[in-house]
Image 1 (tube, rainbow, N blue to C red):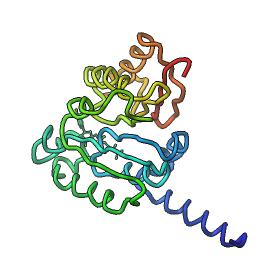
Image 2: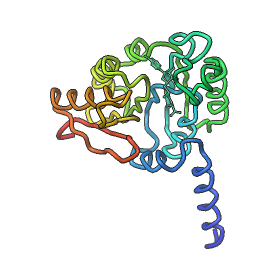
Image 3: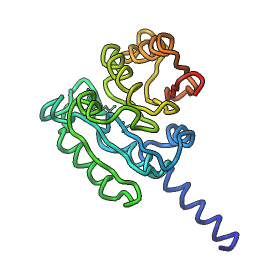
Length: 208
Ligand SMILES: C[S@@+](CC[C@H](N)C(=O)[O-])C[C@H]1O[C@@H](n2cnc3c(N)ncnc32)[C@H](O)[C@@H]1O
């Protein structure tokens, strides 16, 4: 391929990544996760970040886990504000949007969608199954404690747990997630090996 060909291919890829709904704040973070992996996005919503996971990390096997209507009924809560279109966004619509992203995924990324409570679904996988997981669910303290406890068994010994929304401000509505991650690492010999200003985080076992 000519230099111009290589440049325009790079530009095309950069443009596609830029246009993807997660925007630059999170695709940069994804570049730090191993490509071609067996992985999961836990908390999928409309599949916006799923598209980025597919584009940037090119997974070998991707599991999408979300409760959609099983947790929230017909519509997402109005208190989610613009995120749920003030309660007008239906959970089926969010699922259908995610399904379109899945339909456009390359066959080399085998994608499976699971509807239901994340912990119940994750229990069905063998221990040490995932290379990495991306956790983006309720961000509530109790939920995160439960999820991390389970995920620490479900990722490989040298695997990662990553996620969204680690806020330091104790007044933040999602502050509980960060407290749970900190406590989990201290109690279980895990370390925080990446955090960024866009609230992305990644943890792994010490010594791995
Ligand atoms: C913040 S959204 C995920 C956004 C998505 N990761 C993205 O970046 O585009 C949170 C999602 O987590 C799901 N969720 C919350 N608690 C859950 C649970 N216990 N099990 C499964 N899904 C859950 C909700 O249905 C919602 O779609």
